Structure formats: structure tokens, C-alpha cells
Image 1 (cartoon, rainbow, N blue to C red):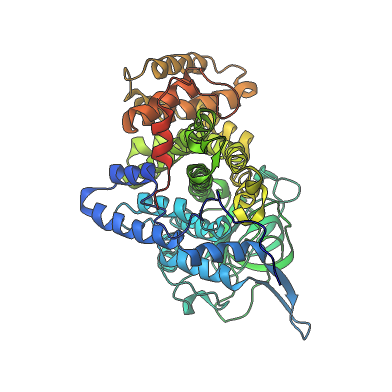
Image 2 (cartoon, rainbow, N blue to C red):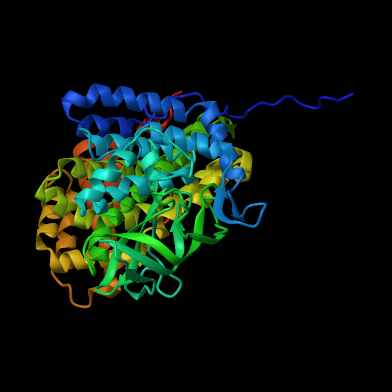
Length: 544
């Protein structure tokens, strides 16, 4: 007979069965700001529906199950035939199907598509970040494919489809398709110009045979992949289908799956090409230029993914502290905890606001907006993804020992948090990309300065930060050694400009004080105590 020694009290209820979109004030306001009036109501309805899906007990359980049951590689079938297939838990397929049906692979052809997708992707990351990889790769493949109009006409409708078809069969027989990507190799890493995979032209126009390897191949269960290989004319982009038009399997040898720190529901593979059929995308020798559009789009998804993880971590921390009592009152009302929560909330809101602004630039498509993206995307990718890990750790600490226990979900966020900083080019790669834009594309810096200049005179700390930034930019001699500092300031000034223009005064005031005015310490929870921190925390609280 079981005995009862105590009654459970003073535990926060699970944060479940709520609208993840409607509970995120910064995200809702960003969507309202950037979506045109004629699609706003439709967009808000669509996102609220997805928000309820993400916040549902069922989808949250699927996320936990997918994470707890990583994919398994099957190189051969029972008879000894080479098949190179990856088996996923059913919850992975359920999540991926929901993501595809929600339009997370189809932003390029609908009004306000990038803002709507960005908000959806930011939310969907909070269900389970792992399945964001194939969704991101599929969405991002479109700019590269459009360099070959015939290829784009063939593939783009499949990529934008809202039907998830997991079967490996000829793409022409499928209502929808997913894309992966393979660029890096063992000897080169981010230096893709060191790639050694060889591409030999075949008799068929535009067809090649590949021989080589890829050290990181994203989403190896996809229907096709964009890869880089060395053709006679130089480094070139190729489309590698998983199944050929006649139904036979292409040579796509999965050697092993990576055993990763986080992102465990997603498969990342090492693959070999040995007489693999491929279709050229773009001209020979223009591989980097062709695939860079895909890289830029996935980098924005890294920003969105980190913003989503940050939002979920902050929501969990504020939710817990709203209910948990200690030392005679609610944790959320304790001045020191309030400072920590407000500081976390500022970081989250700044990331969300910046990410949605960049998505809106994609929707605009104008020359100045494209120039802005050239600096702002790598700068945002550098800074936002780097802030994700310390924020996730601090948010977990807000739950105390509960946050160190797997059932809380916080350890999963902590393990996931460094990924986007590494994926699609680590910090140094982003910083060097910003330097290239500053040196080669003066219109990019002009677009950036025009953007931050829209907030001129609104906050003296922001004005001073812009002035200091201009001084840094005036001397680009020997800049590589201080590139990280410069890119950090570019990102912070842009975030400050956006918050001063769009966020409530208590949010922009606290951000400028803590991030631009130097009136805060090196860790979270060191904001000036005179700020209206209670309002900042209340704004971040997920109302269920």
C-alpha cells in the first residue's frame, strides 16, 4: 500500500495548450508592422492557427518523442542490397508533415510570404528545432534553382507544395519534394574553394558524373540536393536527385550519421559520390555565386531559429517565475529575478524584431533592401546566434534544479542553442562576409546607415553608438583582427534602431541603457535597477 508523505504545491503548471503566436507580443506586432493591409487579416489568422498547433500538448509531445528517438541509418536491406536509407520516428514525420502543410517551404511566390513564413518558422522551432533543417533547405533552394529557369519551372512547384510525401521515388511522381545541401568536405570545412569532389561531363547536355564526398550533408533523406563539385571550368553547383527519372536509386552512399550535441531528431550525414548522376545549376565555375542565394536564405533561418529558441526559453522562465514562490513571494516580483527576466526578454525581443525586419526586406525585393541584407544578414547571423546559448543557459537557471531535468524541456533548448552559430558558417565566416560587403559594396553600407538613421535623435545613447560606429568604419586598415567587435556593434546598433522605432518605451529604454549605453554588466540580470523592468517582464509573459 502506497503511503502519502506530502502534497505537491508551489510548482508551475505546464506551459501547454496556448497560442504561441498570440502570446508573443513582439512577434505579433512585427507581423502587423510588416504585412500589407490586404493580406494582414489572412496572415494573422493563419499564424494564430499555427500558434495553437505549436502550443498543443500533442505537438509538444511529438517534439519530445522525435528528440528522444534519433534517426537510424540502414545502409543495406535484409538481402544485402545497398539502400542508404534513414529511418525516423513517426513523430518526426508528423512534425515535418505539419511544417510542410503550414507553408514553411513556400515563401517565394505569395504576398508577404517571407514575413509570414518567418513568423511561422520562428514558432515551429519551438516545437522541435530538428525538423527545421529540411524545411529551411527546401525553402532556401529556390534562389539557386532560379539561375536555371528550366530547373526552377520543374522543381519550384514541388518545393512550394503543402503536401509531404516521404516516399523515395522519382520526383516527377511526387506531389511535393524536399531539398538538402552538401558543401563542406573533410579537408576544407567552410573553405569550400578547397573542395575536391570532381564532376565529369556526360554526353547529355548539363549532365555530369560526380566522384567525391561531403563531410556534412544536411537532411540526407531529401529528394534532391544542391552540392558543389569541381568541373573542368571550376567549382560548380549541381543538383543531385536521390532517385533518377527511371526509378533507380542514384549513387548516394551514406557512410554514417553524425552523433551531435543537440539537434538530435535531425539526420546529418557523411556521404560519398561514386559515379553519381548530377545536373549542373548555373555556369561552370560559378558554383559559389550560384549557391550563395541558398546560403543567405538559410542564414536568415539561423537567425529565426535562434530567435525561436530564445523566445521559448524566455517564455518558460517567465512562466515558471510567475507561479513559483520563494522567500515570501512570487519569484517574478523579486527585484533581482525581475532584472534577470527583463534582460532575457530584451535579448529575445531584439532578436525577433531584427529577424522579421530582414524577412520584410526579402518581401520588398527592392535594390536598397537587397543591399541592406548583404550586411544585415551575416551581422544578424553572427550576433543573434551567439546570444542564444548564454540566454538558454540563464533561462534554465531561472527554473533552478527543475531546469536541469530533462522533463522540463530546458536541457533540450540548451543543447540546441549553439547549433545556429555553427551552421551555415561559424562566427568568423560571418564577420569576414560583412567585411567583404563593406569593402566591395558601398551601397550595402549606405543602405545600413539609412536604416539606422531612421531613429536619429530618438535616443541619445543610440546616437552616440552610431557616432562611435562611424568612427570604427572610417578606419578599415587591419580591420580583420577586430572584425568581431565591429560586426557586434553593427548588429546592436541595428537592433537598437528598430526597438527605438517600434518597441514600447520601457523596452527601448532598457535596451539602449544595457546594450548601447554601457550601463550593464557582462552577465544577464545587471540592468540599471531604475528602469521599468516589471513592464518589460510582463510584456514577455506568455498569457495562456
